[in-house]
Every structure is written in structure tokens, then in C-alpha cells.
Length: 314
Picture: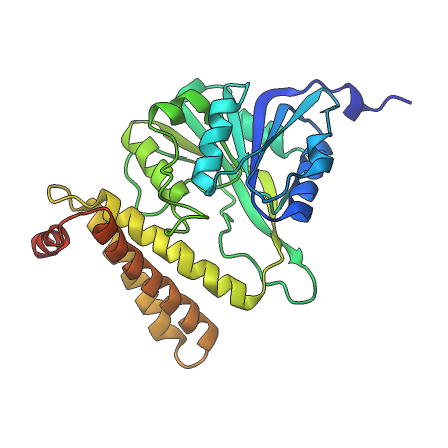
């Protein structure tokens, strides 16, 4: 008997999954997309692992979705995403991480967010926590939980574009120079490539639309110690992002940075002594942010006087 899933036409988009060194998680993510109520025209995997993933490499076409596998010797999530964006056959590219499961109607819901307006819109969905795995997995830190639709234009006081569960127009992102390959997992600044891209899109006049019905589940597979290391790397990336966009003539980024650090400091004060885990986590994030900002200025040859002058003007 032929089912509705087998006869549904693929949706006109490329789903891009980038991965490194997590073959089991990657395979689960691929199978989750292919089991959805609707599949994309193309599922593109850019794998920076040491060894190629034979099972995905030979997957072929599933329900009209062409599964393409690229094994790359490069390193860094931003570089992998840029490779995928340049390689994708479809104009709309949906970014996924390799450690998520997708809800059955996720793809159609997300693409509904970009279909009416064309390339001026980026669509994002919710990223919720999946149940803990392996007896010791802790909920991931990078979740998107707000359940109301929203449209963001211009400058925002918080990051409104996550790294995954995002539909973009490939030519728009590439015209902005793609993802900054100095930022993100696999670099010395292990995060904030999504914050940077979201900021640049909004600065260029594009619109970010949140579609809460488009849900993916972020798997809780990391240990508590791994999560703290991840917070440090995310903080390093965030500090680098702030330092990158810091301007003597425009204090917005400096104000955003001081607002975020102030909020984390207040959370530490409220948590002492009842919640040592919150204190440690927020302190790690603050330390990572300050370290990343300082390191960016030194490595990218930004004069130290730039920050000092901006601080005086604030």
C-alpha cells in the first residue's frame, strides 16, 4: 500500500547539516529529516570528520530527496556552512545541527515563514530540549523556547537568529560574505557565528521571522563538564563578536555587551549561595566573553585604545 508520506512532493529547499566526529548523531539527524511528513528536494551533508561516513555517502535518493554527501578536509563550522551554501542546488537553504531530531511537520512550517516574502526574510523556529540521554546527559544551553510568532527588524538587544533551525536564501548570505570563518565551533572563538550573521543580516535591512510551530529537539547528550566547556567556548565567540563590531562612532555593541555581562553578574548575585551551578555557569560565560574580546583585539590587530576610548565615551 502506498502511503501519503511516499507520495508527498519534496519541498523546494536544501537542508544543510554540517558535522565533525559525531557519526552516530549525524546519521540519526539525517534519518530524522528523511522520516518527516515532507522532505526537502536536497539533503546536503558537509562532514569534516577524519573518516567519511559510508552509510550516508551511499544513501542516494529517498522519497524524491537527493541525499548528497561531501567529505571535507577543512575545519570549522562556519567554513563547512559556507561550503554547503556554495554547493547547495536550491535557493532556500535550511541549516540544521547534527545533534537534533526534527518534528514531523517541521520543514513545511519553517518554509512557510519565508515563502510569502522571498529573499528579504530569514525564518527561524524553536529549538527545544529532548529528554536526557545516557543517564547523565544535561539539557543543552542553546535553546530557543519562545512560543509566540515574532518579526525582528533593525537592531535588537538580544540575539534573534540561532545557529540551527534557520531558513536562509543562499545568495543573500553569500552576498554578505558568508559566515565569518574566524568564528564558531572548530576555531579559537568557538561560537557566535550565528550571532554575527544575524546582526549583519539585520544591519543590511533583512528581516528575521520567528515561526514557533517549526520545532526541532536538541539532544541532551553532553555531560555537565562538557556543557561548562561549551559555555566557555560560546563565551569566547560572543566576546569576539562584540569586539569585531565595536565602533568608536556607534556605542550600540558596547552597550549590548555591558548589558549582557551586567545581567549575568546579577544572576550570580541572586544565585549565591543557593545555586552553585548557576554561579559557576555564569562565571564561565563572563570569563569566556572577556577572554574572547581581548583575544580578538590582539589577534585581529585592533588597537587596544579602541576599547578604552569607547568605554570613556559610554
